[in-house]
Image (cartoon, rainbow, N blue to C red; front, side, top):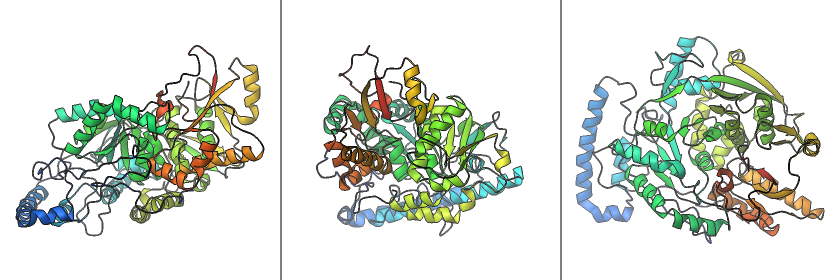
Length: 570
């Protein structure tokens, strides 16, 4: 399923605004190339130079750029001649990417890839230090860790510990010591970003010190459908969105406007890379683990620390190994893996732990399927969750036009897989046989109340749960990928061929505008709409309680079936 992506120029990049035909209210992204060099190149709050603009500037711009080249060269020489400082000397945006070694600099994403449209942007490319993959630095730190620990390393250790500020001296005592880390990225959604940005502004810095993005996905209330709901949100939160957009432009932060997609889906499609470390102001940031990247949910103040270039503190987590064998059969899906695990370990079983999947079963899962599992690991309280790098991840990177990252990952594969013989260094190991795993339904009231589908009817009959189904939903960041929506549409077609029709209202949400455009292109969206589904905007909606529900009395006991997150307890 990873290869089903639209052709053409659907990807939004910096300095380029684009809206799909017929959807003027969706995916109005805007990325500005802001000053990359703090204080020195603050010519404006956001650069949007085109070739024609460069020609209009002419000789004056050329003279100015040449002067700045000299200044920057001298500054760079001075910086390189100084002794290294720990953590606080993070170079401009992200120190973890640049090595200065020809051939070692691989762009971190398409969106932050500086392009040579003019002499000015060519100069920026020569000095940019913030848009490259961190593999050279991570490999050096990995060598240090191997000498220190002198044993096989599990994948979580490789990724987390190579992001240490002080890999040579940091105490590494699982569950006890506190780590000082340099994340590669930070991300906030609109419900937390306002306070985070105000706090960052108070720091007095000219721009963020690592790549960061803000996403407009949490404030949109589901009620009438995508177009009307999005317009209502833009009107109701006009001042919020205006502040976020202007602050992002000023401080070199990517801003994904309301309707562009859910934060975790956008990150996965555009920014996630194997071996990286991202922190986000949402508990489901572990979604990035489906790309072999550690994602950790944090509070707004923690994100601000990282954005300001300060070390980010984390208690050294334990590692829970989950060995997968076999292959999913019949109606079983990737979600049943995490539903089963929740029933085994409970809602607090992952507290203070990274859940690391390994074993031959991991090779049978798609990238978005693994992302869903990692995302839902938050419901067992995990610090993060991760899968080893696989061919499915490489295919997804290729499908999302990031072959250059897949190529770099292959060259650094030792960083992206657990060492042979490392199994005995997990704090605990749980085994799940995919061959015998059946579909599960979890709930109600708590996400660890796990029921195999074959036993669910008996559980309902013997309990006092409401038996009347009142609404159904397909979506959120756990069930809104192309693969998810394709499967759901096939179920509708099979039901229709058997003479069955939906009897209750149901919502459908695509995870991003990219996915919405793709399912529309392939006729999947038509299947939902012909069956009576209401298409919501590309946002969180009911998953975070943003649902103005009027057809059911608030005191009425009812049953809500959803393929959203386990956290929903409506």
